Image (tube, rainbow, N blue to C red; front, side, top):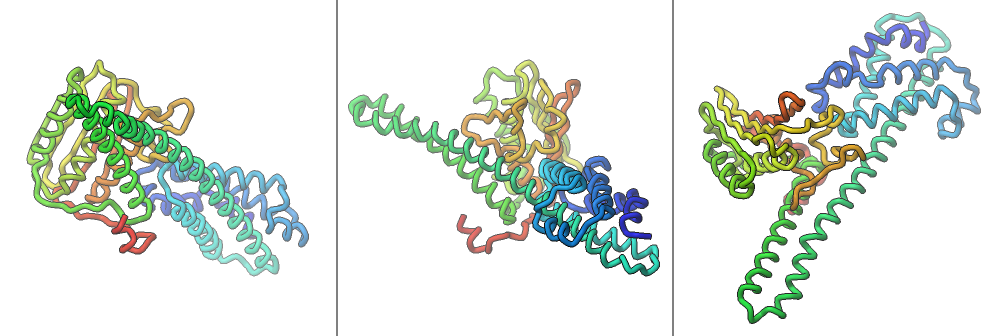
Length: 394
């Protein structure tokens, strides 16, 4: 059987292999079949049709340079473009997207070989056409992925620049006013407090940005686990948020043993981000609840709020600041002093403790972010793209 005909006759077995491999990747671990297979069938079918279409030597030369646009190429490029954009939204990095194509190529050729097809003088041409189509699809996917990331990064930098300008302006204005009010101690103190508060806001933004950069470069979130009582930390945070939001109802619930080995500062950072997110986006008609629950091997941190649910289309990308809220229908609304990385950092804190974070959101049940932490954290550090010495200086 010719390779193109084999592909069209065995789409389901090929897709099953694609699904298994995609699930083995970090971002695909908890996706359903529909998400794992997204656009794979279209890519396979367009590849087979492209292989079966007549092609002269001159046309092949043009195709290798991306100069011709036959119908089969448009179908293949469209499926590849959509696949890359969806994979980005689901949290796959570019290497994972590329590895899907590598696995697809190997799977098709292995399955075809296993059928022991009889030798045919056209086999070399079939293999050449197959590899050309897969390379074209991969090239289109990488270009689409990169373009979308660049667009999101430009938007992110614009937001960062805008949000940093406000505290910087407050510092500059206070510095101008100080010489004018030097004899009025109350005014001097007020200017000093404004400068200190604005500097703190900027420091928090820059710290979040550094954390984001470290994790994106592969260095992972730095953590130093030590024995701690999660209930005590939760009580401190609740007191802080109640004082800062006296008009909001905030509840605190604890259950079970909440002692373990975690990085106190990082856990505080994650819990604070989730609480701030709930207070910002939740309805004031419903309480914000922090629930801590201890089981034998794990503890769970749950932050719940009522109000308008997260749109279903945004749930898969809710933890990525470069993707989340980029639509005109649901733009991101950051808290003062935040550059929209709270959920991303909460996820990275959980991952760095060998844990995970999940989100559920509905009209009836409200919105809940739940972190699961092993009682004895085993810090997970990625393989850095830059050398360790360079990253440690960041």
